[in-house]
Image (cartoon, rainbow, N blue to C red; front, top):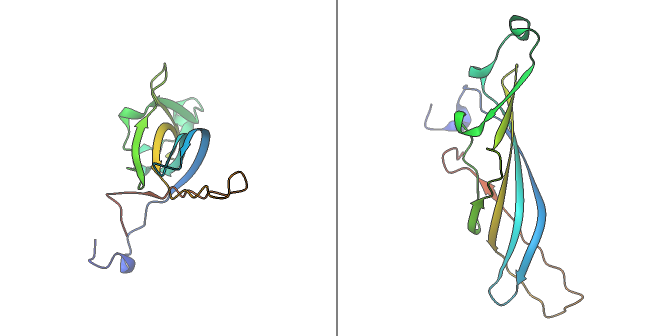
Length: 138
C-alpha cells in the first residue's frame, strides 16, 4: 500500500452501515449524555467467501456465528459506554454466495451530547453519533 492511500490502485473495501435508534432510555441534561439501545447493520463483501451456488445444490446463502468471520471494527467515537447486547442466541451473520455479508449488532450506548434544555418543552436536541474504524482510517 503506498504512503498516499488516495493514489493506490488497490480496490477499497466498501462497508455500508445503517445506524438505528431502537430505544432512548434516558436524556440527562446535567451530565450531558443520553442512553440508548442502538442497532448497527453492516453489509460488506469478502471475496474469500465466494462460492458457485450450482456446486452446492443451489444454496445461495448460509448463516453462521459472527465469531467465525472477520468483522469491520466500528465504534461510536463519542460513546462513553458501548456494550454489545447479547441475546439468547449467538449473533448470526448471513453470508451470500457472492461473498456479501450482512450483520446486525445491537448495543447499549451511553453517549456524550451537548444538551441545552433551557427552552423545555420547546427545545430541540441534536446528538450526533459518528461511526469510525480505528484500523481503516483514510
